[in-house]
Amino acid sequence: MERKAKLILTALLFVGAVVSSYFAVETYANYTLEKKFANRLSKLPLYASYRKFHYNLLKNDVEIDDLTFKDSRTYICVGKLYIDLPFTARKKEVPQAFSVKAEDLELPSDFLGFRELLRFVGYRNPFVTVNFVSSYSFKGNSIEVSSTAVARRLGGINLELKLEGIDRKLTQEFLEGRIPVRYIEEKGALKEFKLTYKDFGLFQQFLSFVGSQEGQKPDKVKEELKRSIVQAIRRRGEIAERVGLPLLLFVDNPDCLKVEVKPPFPIKISQLVDMASKRPKVEEIIKTLNLRLTTCN
Image (cartoon, rainbow, N blue to C red; front, side, top):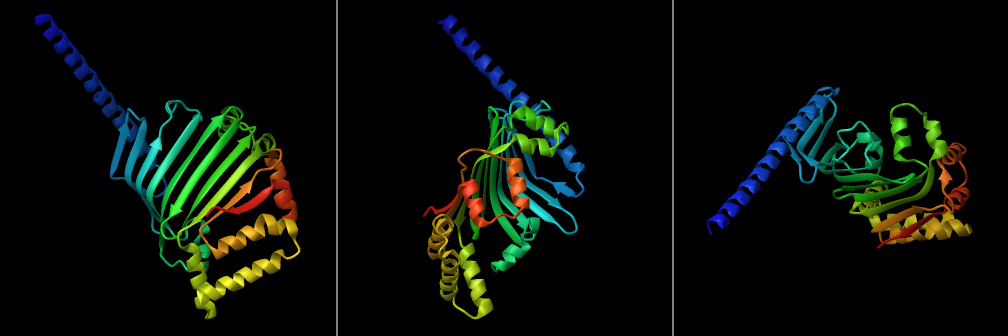
């Protein structure tokens, strides 16, 4: 009986030591990472602050609350920022995979030149609140990127991108400035691209705004828009099938619209850049990229 009690006591002491060591390591890691983070913030050309920084050793991720950037003309606030740290984060190399998530991200409505677009659809709020998730992962000699942004009362966009010929080593060399952009363009090739738009009121705001400008009801604006699309795709078979008809369905029931590019064979990025510079016809773009619109109601 005494021997059993000693074993139980030893086990409890061991567990206690492990738990204490865990929290000690986590506390030290949190202190070290926060110190580095604060040091980098201090070097930014604008004021930056945050309320809370927490590192979770078990999940190996960082949570930052109320991260704010501002100067005399700009104000950006992130309610919560989650960074999934790769286990190679301490090494100065490109991680095999990486993800970041931002909740309640407040951006000025003119951020990245969106002012004219938002004004065009009648959006007058000085800020846009967005939830954002983005990640990438290398798989052999290719990279897959995924990003999702959802703006309250406006809409959401999900982007998926697959590129061949760009591996982790090549990306590391590019970021270090050892190879030029043109080399990346020659090596990399587009395998697949998907963009999905989910409407949460932006399209209706657009119809209402145009109607208010022209003295028409939103339903009248919608019908005129549908007539314009029908006229534009008349006698243009492939454009009508791949782009026009799905667009008509979306206008009639603005819920979800997907743009998909999946060429028969991966297309070099350099070829895409050259093609864009020549301003090709819509038919050529559709055929080369195997582009198609679909509704996803």
